[in-house]
Image 1: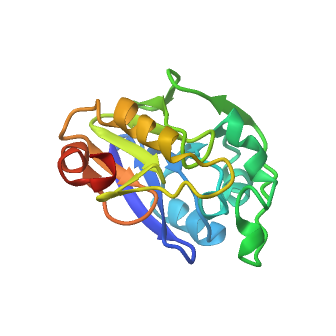
Image 2: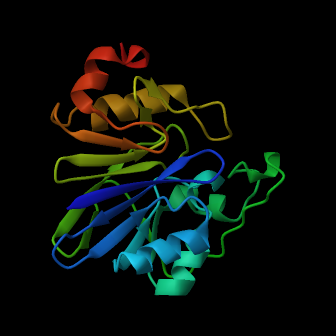
Image 3: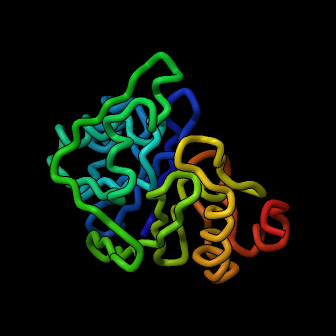
Length: 207
């Protein structure tokens, strides 16, 4: 698996493409915005999208879902507790930006901890990591984990939004993420990548 990181939108949200290097089949994680540009990039690189994976439903992570589904006819994976975020501008926070984001997704698959998502040779395990949102999930496999806004480089996600809980988030990180091997590469929703070992040692929010 090769991972491509593409910052999108005004908040520089990290959209990831996890691709099977042999077949170019890929999973698209958190397609934040700039749908037409993202579709053009995927076609230029000859990727073969198989699914969209959402770590959570905030507007800065879902803005290009409709464009991708329209272009490639692929399913969307999201936890059931974050389904309302796709169409509720209050929950997905776009109400406060002046640019309402409402996603009318099709072919929706609900995921929960213990599930797996596969694409070519790629197999990702779903981890329940609520706290930033009630239905937050992470996707783990092949030595990497896509965590959305649950964990950042030496920080953690905000929990002061509706549905957020710092107690729940710290529990998610401690029980679901810090139990992974130290050399696991962490791909967050914003900012640079890090490792589980680094966060275990230096993340002040988790001490």
